[in-house]
Length: 146
Length: 146
Length: 146
Length: 146
Image 1 (tube, rainbow over the protein chains, first blue to last red):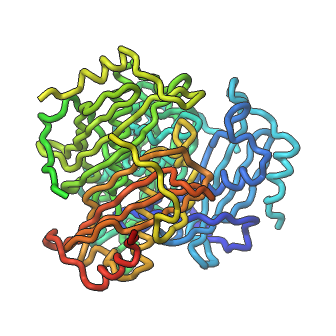
Image 2: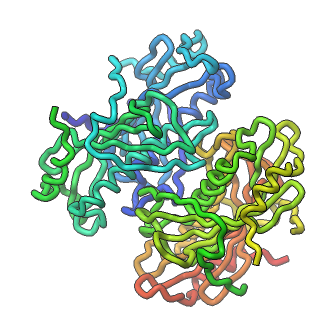
Image 3: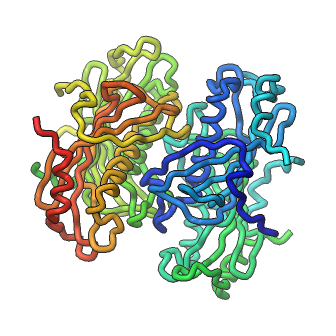
């Protein structure tokens, strides 16, 4: 598989700052590969909360993760401060996909990059629910147009 | 993106049993998407320990994760027992890739499937170290030949 | 503070087996002090589920933790199997307290001991709800009478 | 057991700000009781790092937790910002004890209070190592004199 190099901060549309925890480091003394997903999960949710168009309560709609992934380029870990860059890479009928770059302290190049694909389903039926105009507009804000 | 359907237990070469924890469930009452990676990480490490050819101490060699990913098909969560099916999908010069199916209790169809690609590097230099014959033989045991 | 020595398995009424995860080990190569609480939390919940008299859904009643604690005697960590010994140390009007011993693999002496005090409250009002006879009987089963 | 009421911010000597994560919330929609310990662990370590007199590498000395505990007064959870108030309650020959108040957003009253007792041991022998003058002076800075 051909390796894509890590991207820079300019490739992302908005940033969320995340703190690391002592427990994030594993036996090798750096951030365990699982923690990257916890940071991505939190960055996405905090961005969605700030948008106030997503139903995060689960009352009517649930946002389900359908696929996620991460490529690891360099080490990071507690006590680093992490800056998660976000962009939307795809908007479908009831689903969408974020791409996330994780940046360590003041570094310009991502130490890891991931994606996070979600679908919106009705809480009672579990069936996909088409995106409202307001959700679509919100996601469109952080699409990066080349 | 075309969706691949979940695979069955017969598609995997060996199984590791994993218990869930109360803390694994998130606000929606099912396993948080991050936990799948913790289960995969643990299944791979337990299998490697049982092989006794991998240097897991980090003294001479470190096993670094270069990429991971997961597709989510159905819900699972505490108090389910999880059976992680493992197979090796690729063996390179100093790297290799596992594919993992996560099965809930007695279910035949995976509720999630992931992969976990590692490279072996020298602890002091960080340079990739070619696989020994014993490691290669070990990984070959769980390659699924169609 | 006078130190109480670790207790043996005979001091506990029932046992729950728990598996460790790779991620449980911290930078020092042993189980992070936080994980003990995750194991205790899970052992208590699994015991309560098996009793089938506790309302764990949160629909009518919620079981709130009011206090917890742990003393650490010796190291443990992935890939150890942990056996959590449980006993009930106190039963109040609407609250109760578990004492838990954590045992590593086949060891007779606890590597850590904790407690976990809960109160049952009404989900809608948050007010303490007196224990039913069936909950009281269930808790009484694992009181250790000297 | 007589219940001590939650303390206010003025009862603590220094503060560390901590962010919550989506994964911190459990099935009841609030911070799982285990997470409080992860926050305490991180607050203590970050304070110790800033002091630069503690050996946190584990090379010569290891800081072992001997006991911890937490009382829970009120709910908190993602996306709250947590302010951890620290003070030193006891300094022994080779051990010491922190008391920690966890405050939610701008609240004046702690939603949880815990303690964290550590001992400094030699990494090779595991034997307690008396505190150096610099460590003792550092700890003394955050003793609250009534």
